[in-house]
Image 1 (cartoon, chains in turn yellow, orange):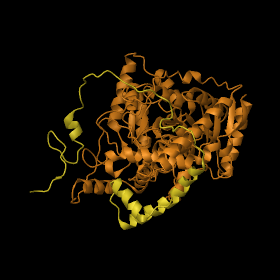
Image 2: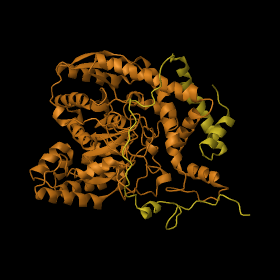
Image 3: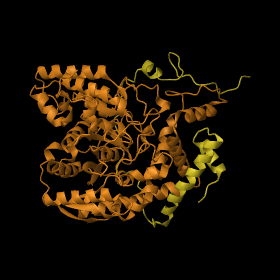
Image 4: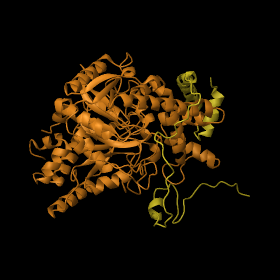
Length: 97
Length: 500
């Protein structure tokens, strides 16, 4: 399967990565090379083979739903690029009327 | 300054230091001071650390010394200093993952492994350098600076746990923690001539480890010998209610399993990893190591992993797919870098933030992973890779029925030059060709030094075992180390810098 430069631009959009033209060219080249490796998988007969999403078979793990003290809010907010005393501050997403 | 000869203490394995601490011949405060002085002396040449934490280390050392003075029975490694890879959280300390996007981030809690290391009385001297978000094989993908190999500072230490491997190799610190998604503990251990263990998937809690590939990531030790690896694994392993992938399987006394006796042990050499894609010098060293194991009473035969040729595409589909999902959390909202540019809406803000914050290799993997998971390609790529993974896993199961352990080179080559492979990502990926299949299968892998190239660079042998049977590969590794001295060799840099 080959991939066009426009496809790469679309993937960048999905991945939320803003890319310059130069970066898109470089990434397009990389995709070309790595897809050659991926294409080799098509030759493997996997008829009736179950996928391994986790290497070791595990059952679901549950625990009692108990109330525990949360992390300290001010400590968490201290890492935020923008915050007030209570909340993370995000950029405005609605246009002014 | 320390008196002459004092630094030689740091050249001893942690279990010997623990005995000296026990008998009162040395204090943790003294060992920690020596480690911090040696770090300071060698950092200009090595750059193994991103953050050094002298105050916390001294406090922890004093606390463990006074606990010992009160005759409280300490854990086996109490008082021995340790370094932590910079993708594990230490409360109040920077945790950058060697990425600009987390440059200003300070951890707000301890990772489970860090909590356990602290509870065991081990002073943390600092956070080690790595490839950004653990993506890389040379530590050159660090956003801050590359780490240099102590055996030749013009060469890479391997990666992604290159800082931890270099720090232990240069005896800046006797022990370090790394993480291994496709070989990131074992391959740098091989390049730097130290011992490194990737435990079984689920053996060690990943709570507080910044996630890369969630079905592959595992934390493990980098040490100077197998006994230390056994002791440190015991400290960090075991069930954790905060990580549901961490298995509720009993952790045996791994150090007690190191009997030195491997008579009758059935060892298989993985044939597919002894072909011409592997340096002749490396193959030669593995052949000699196999003979040494045979001399110790093991039987050695030929093992085969027929699908191993597909492990590169399988790994480079699954790991980036998981990474693209895990790294979606870096959006400039709650922590980390946020763009200063005026963005038109929040999606534009995310995109600019991530582009400024992530390095080239991280972007490559996010892109590959996003593509592999995107509509129309999921079945052909991601699902197909997970099916071939099943075949790989079955290959290992079959081989490990016939043999008790498997051996192979840890890496196809010795450490390469800084800058040599940076422009060829896929050639760089090949550096982990011997290791990532083990992560895909979820089983444990150990690397031990098994010789040196003509140029004087260390060569590593990988030992692979059955799930949750770290004890057998450690026993074989320890028996081998008792019979050889490759792991005792110390790079010249430790003598050069006016330290002894």
